[in-house]
Each structure stands twice: as structure tokens, then as C-alpha cells.
Length: 428
Image (tube, rainbow, N blue to C red; front, side, top):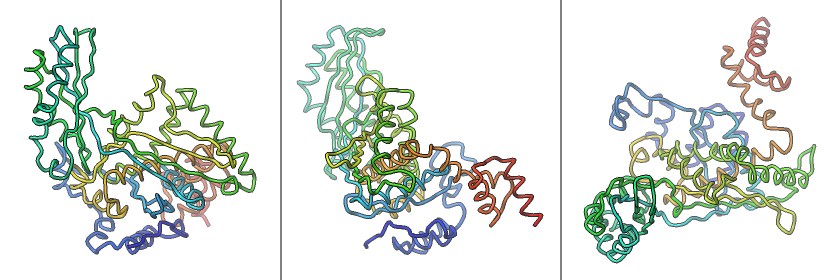
């Protein structure tokens, strides 16, 4: 099936009409459609099997970003998020990028790390070589614990041993298991392997194993995205494309040199990535942890993206970050809407999902930098936030759009103003 990610006049449709368009575009069944149209897709009974002490379920707005073209393939991107402007900004930037060839993405293999901490040793460097000498034996024990993964072409591929000769708890070594987890996020797999090899590690080193746990700094499991847009594609009625490009690069440079700005800059990137991770039932906390740790890999916290000009004067944006996501296991298989999100995206591997998420993060960053470099972040954001304020003031139905549009046109988005406008509207 060929999907067209362009969503013309989507904003003007009702939620029901939007969903019918998506359902037709991706060929959803009546059962699939019921998950979205009927309240409570995640039943309390199913939720009770997912976590502890369940008392009910908690929902977020579930939207779709359009216009994304990734490696020549159109992708509809489900996003679960509460913040206004996120879906709109991603879709608008994707539309601009689409006109210039779309997003190019790539990724490394689905490699995760498990760490095995060893204490109580006096010869850490000797212990390191002892482990490396018995590498094949360690790999055999690790791989004995997951025959299914081995059958799928994955498994523990190698080990690394890191020496910390002088810590507050004495000499320490940490062995890393380097594991190809295929289409899983991989936490349970690598944790099980780390526990399985621990007795052998103690025997080989003479030390005591303490922690046996994955690392969320998945620096061997990277997703990358690149875009290139011309000045012509970026120009507005008020500003030339060249001026906007200079403003975007100035804003990026601020984030590259200043960690205070970088924190907000990277948060904006995650505004795009997290909703995709949540919508697909993946662990957004793991992705966040890995992303921010990766932003410090030079020893200083900095931007996850780069923005520059090529020789023709076009804007080139890139992103690279860890992307430990999966298509199997956890909520991706138990949450009905997570499964539906993956169906809408039509991704075929965890790597492909990670690449789409990276492209969305890059688009979101472009949208934020473009706004900051032109009219400022509040103009567009507050115009979209006006609907929330109208709701808070008590507006319903058509009143919401009427009050929101009025506040946006006045550049005065406040609850008391919304209340006044609502009262005026109802008096009419």
C-alpha cells in the first residue's frame, strides 16, 4: 500500500473526519478503528496486567503529524502529547523539507550494553585481561539464555572491560556485554545475560559482582537524520530565506556553546521525539536519558543537532542520538493503541522506527529555531495554546474556535480575556 503523508486541510476537519482520512489511508480494520473512536482502548483489566496497583487509565491527546517523507517513503507519524504546537510545528516543517527532497536517515545496528560491576579485587588490570582471555566462554554463557534471539540473528557479540583503579570503594572493573537485540528495546534480554554470566565473572576475577544492569547510554545504537532546505523554501512575506537561515544558525550556535541554552534547545528536540516514543509504547525515559547523556559525550553539554550552510547557501540540519526503541516486547505488544500506532507508521524494524523518531526531532528543532529567529516562539505557540485557554474559560463546541481566534488576533491569550470574550459571545 502506498501512503501519502500529506494531509490537506486537515486542520479544518473534525476529529472524526481526520480519523476517517487516516483509517482509509492506511487501511485500518473496523476493529482498529474502534480502538480510537470508542473510549478506553486500554481497558482497566489490561492495564492491571501491565503495572502494579492499577486504579484506572490515563489518556493523552493522540494526533498524527503529516507531510513526513523519510528516505523517499511517506510516513504518517502518530504522536501522543499534551503540549500545543508540537504536532503542528512538526507537520509544517516536514512540509517545507518535503519540498526539498525530504529527510535522509540512517542508523547503526540494534546494539545494547549490559554492565557487570566487579569489586573486591586488587589486580584490576590483571582481572581485565582474564575476562578478555575467556571472552568466548562468557559469550557462550550469555547466549545460552535466549535461544529465540539467537534464532533471529541476534545475541551477545562481544565484551568490553573498563578499569577504574581508584574509586571510593576500591579498585573496580566493569564488564560490558555488547548485545544485538534485533527488534526489541532489549532491557530484559541484556539484564538476563548480565545475571547469567556473573558467576563465571566472579570465578575468573576472584572479585564480587554487584550491579548487573543495562546502560541507557546506548551509544552503539544510534539514529541519524539529515535535511537540506533552500532559502526559497524558507522565505516568508516578512523575511528572505537567507535571513532566516542566518537566524537559525545563530540560534543553533548559542545552543552549541552554552549549556543553559542547550538544555532548552534539546528539550525542544525531545518535544518531537517523546510523543512518537509514547505513542508506540516505548520507554521514553530511556530515550531521554540516552539523549541527554549523549549530548555530554564531549565532556560538555551541547546541542544534539547541527545547523550549517552548504556551498549553495542551503540550510543543512543533522541529528544523531541513541535510539533504544523496539517493536516487540513491553507495551508495544500489550497496549492496543501502541500496536495501532506502529500499524499507522508502517515501520518494519526497530531501526526504522528510531530513524523516523530522529527525523521528527530534527523537524521539531527546525520549527523552534525558525520561530526564535523570526517572530519569536510565543506568537505561534500562544495562538495554538489559545484553544486550551478557551476550554479553561468554559467554551464548548464552536465557541472554542471563535474565542481562540479572537484572542490570537489580539495577541492577548489569557484566561480572563477568554472569559470576557465568551460572555460577550453568549450575550449575542
